[in-house]
Amino acid sequence: MKLTKYLVSLALIASWQLSTDNSLNAQQSASTSTERFIENDNTGQWLNDPPAVQSHKKAKNVIIIIGDGMGTAQVYASVVAQKDASNFLRFPYSGFSRTYSNNKYTTDSGAGGTAIVTGHKTDNYHIGVLPDNTPVPSFLTLLRERGLSTGFVVTSSVLDATPASTYAHVPHRKMYDTISLHMSQCGFDVMIGGGLSNFRPENRKDGLAPLDTLRQRGYDIAYSLEDMKNSKSNKLVTFFCENYYGPVAPGRDPILAEGTKKALEILTKNPKGFAMMIEGSQIDWSCHNNNAEYMEAELADFEKMLKIVLDFAEKDGNTLVVVTADHETGGLVLTSGDIKKGENECKYITDGHSGVMVPVFAYGPGAETFSGIQQNTDLLPKVFRAMHLK
Image (tube, rainbow, N blue to C red; front, side, top):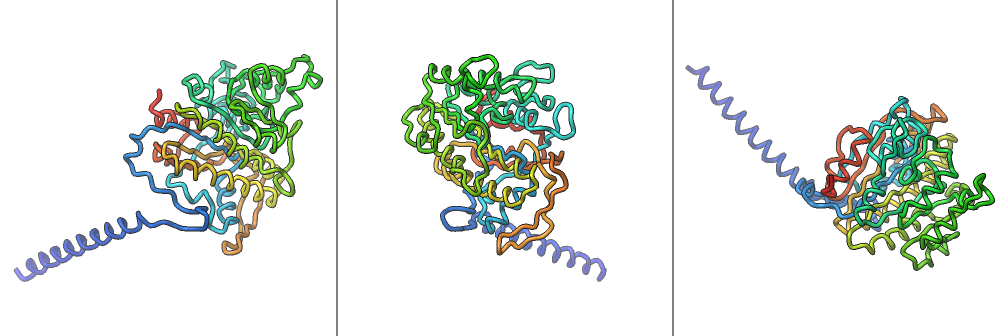
């Protein structure tokens, strides 16, 4: 009998302790959920956590941002370099994307970009087509047809694989003359990057002039940062160079941040909403070169653009922002470093792409659906669901 009473007493005490612990945990959780990590000038500051009910709110605008070659190690290198004031820390939701292409374990930017912007796997080097060369439209094309304003900003040629995947349909990414014809006819409102050379008739085998086509379709053509800023047109194409401009260090103009500002200035005029793709193109190039200093400069440039976009999205309240990569480049490993000093010790195991998963970050209406491990082709259907579109 005494043993029975003793056991009952122990059970009651354990039950009371568990109830107390749960109550304390709930109180702690409620407290920490409202805390904010504050840094100067809003950089590195948590955005307002979108509650689960935000999945029912419609995203009016969407911005898909691609860090070409940007794997998890590259992102963490940026977090460290920014001394824990990184804009990546502002995203309340994150996950991973599986990047393999239709025919290769390790994708290239053609198949990787096509998967992200069209929702379809394809073979390496393909742009905007299925493995059998059937054309598939990008989210920019589909949303343009629904009356939204559209555009892209890149730090590469506008004819490179990632931007080309938003408007072109070719079996090989280096068909630049054909790709430029497709761009001149795609109808996007804003297109900012390099690659003017292939738009001039004297540099083409067919003698055609896509540059003239753009002018005839009502575009203002800008050739410098100053020209772009001063443009008053709602249809703008900017060519910053004939082919490819150099790294941000030591002297490239702040084209990613300023191009993003200009694009937002134009695209936000449409009351129906807008869709935009932004690419930090040269993160990939720096990792192909196994150049950590080059990489960190491009990531710092990427961070400035992220701040502009996230500040806009937080103020707007109706914009879904998704950040990911087409693939990882360099097999980057961070072997050591100093977080207080913002220093990384970087090692690369290849000068090509790797097949690892890449990170996905999301903010805004529907952002919570981007958590977990997903295919790169899953991103676009989630975007459309967030916009309440089929």
